[in-house]
Length: 173
Image 1: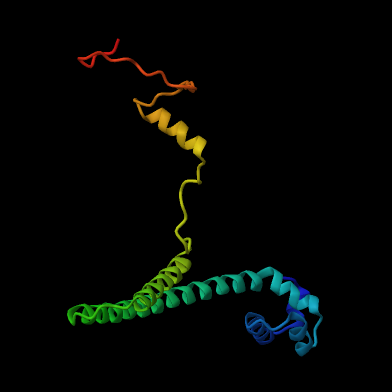
Image 2 (image 1 turned 45 degrees about the vertical axis):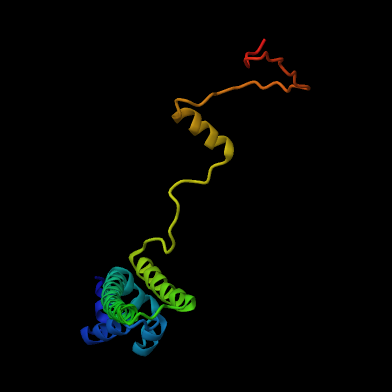
């Protein structure tokens, strides 16, 4: 640290300035409150405080994510228990679910699954692993995998059919 900077601010002032910076108070306001130049405070920010604040932000976000995940898992667990007991009561009583009730139940489960996937960083919808293919590609795959597939057949159109004459015994002459 620079000797000039040490002479300008006391340890108490530096501690106060750091705590204010860590609480996201603007550097210019901190400097104004201490009656020093903005560059004096900015020096401390660039040297030490900025990396500490970034680390603290990361830790806070991580703690929040873990707490949120635990709360969501607990909520989902309770919700699934409730849905499970309701479905069990419905099926045990012989009550048949109406289509809109079944659809509502499935929508609830689907939305809960999407929220869980989103939190885990997974896709929220099921995505096909293979791209759609056209008829030509399907034909190529069938030809490659089917040993009995006749590759090319030439057809000729018959304009008129001849009738074969048959003898008494049914033989064709």
